Image (tube, rainbow, N blue to C red; front, side):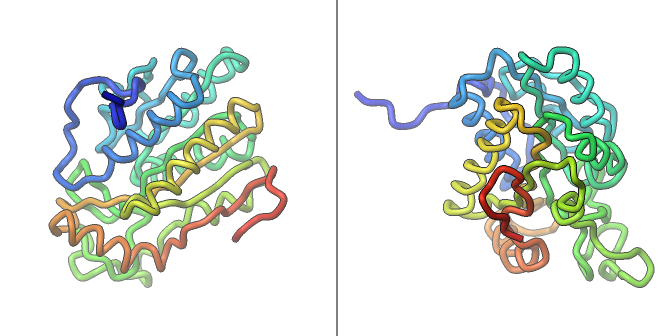
Length: 252
């Protein structure tokens, strides 16, 4: 009998700890598939962040390093520079990690053009610590610390990471994708694979921002969370390629 579907070798057999309906599991699989298809599992080193994805070292079947909150790009820089020819290094970070305490590490890793791959999961909220407002929380969005909705007059506007990094000369490839339907999942897979391929080819800093759901802290069922993402996050965070130095043209 022909095998038409199987677990990627780059994933372990450990059961995921994520809440029902959380799309971290989908993103994990896409990363693992990219690693497998490029044949780089033996060379790959992942850097886990702090947040809901803090246990990624249990799920990826490759060498993993745990970084302090927000410091994954800095740790990845050290790991990559220790053996730049052989090491393929990626970070897996949420928005509370990458776009808050880790903003400086993210920006300066891009500015230096570090040859690493950053997977940035944006669910517009702090997930692990209870659903507080994050730097990516939408205007008017209700969270545990913005019960009347995010007020831009007092706390400012959300940070759009791809748009911000597109102005950094050292960044090579920036794309925003989503995993709310099959079409977008396929596009996300292609973007993640390209980000790893860029590193294999020595092209420099690549970041893929993945719009994700948080049904538990959004207070929604899994299916309604997917609808909320489509109706609210996609208009504010448009999908697409924000920078690609090696493409014939850029889409912004």
